Amino acid sequence: LSAFSPLFLRYVEFFCADVAQWLEQLIRNQ
Image (cartoon, rainbow, N blue to C red; front, top):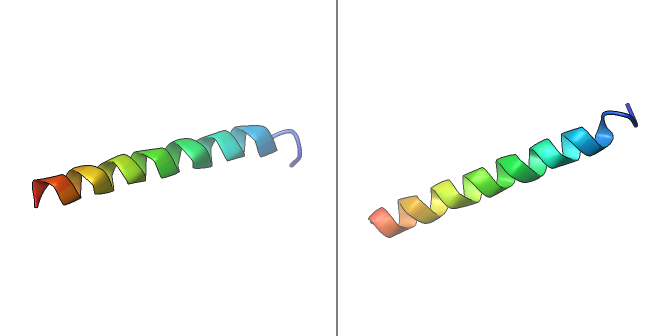
């Protein structure tokens, strides 16, 4: 599990950034 931990954290970081960008576009469209 510890070997996959950095990869998992990087995936979560990328996912959160993608969601934040999507929310920003959604707010700007309204």
